[in-house]
Length: 200
Image (cartoon, rainbow, N blue to C red):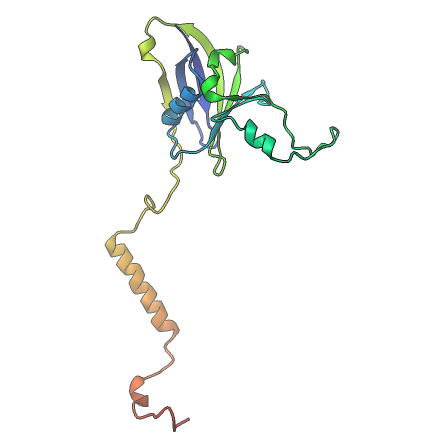
């Protein structure tokens, strides 16, 4: 069996790197699921691969699901071919479960972008290292080296909470500030005999 060695970078975390070995006949959906675990991603967000040239310019896109039908239903604005602000794309598109790695690794230093979560985007840079052969296919896929971790995205479930004593001190300070700020000499006993209908 042939397998591929890749190096994965995430430039938003210093020294973040993963070295992975995966079967050459693995499809991109399985590659995505493996990377999800290996990289420490969270959630169930949309993901896509882009096959790139040496300058990381996208040449092909590989998505989790086929979006061609949805695109045909949308109105496509026409752009002037000479318009430098044109946003149209004519990149060939493929579906992950139908696309095999071996069919897209065409360069000795193939570059691939792995984009995860388009709302809070994370982009990983994947560089092909080499192809090799093994007689132990059960050992693959595997992560052979890892360094660095992704930052934790805080939510109401994992947001750090102050301990009880610290919370009590914060509440006492707040009450003191409130009392100090609104002490205008009002004494409720001074108005006990006041009749609100006749004395104003």
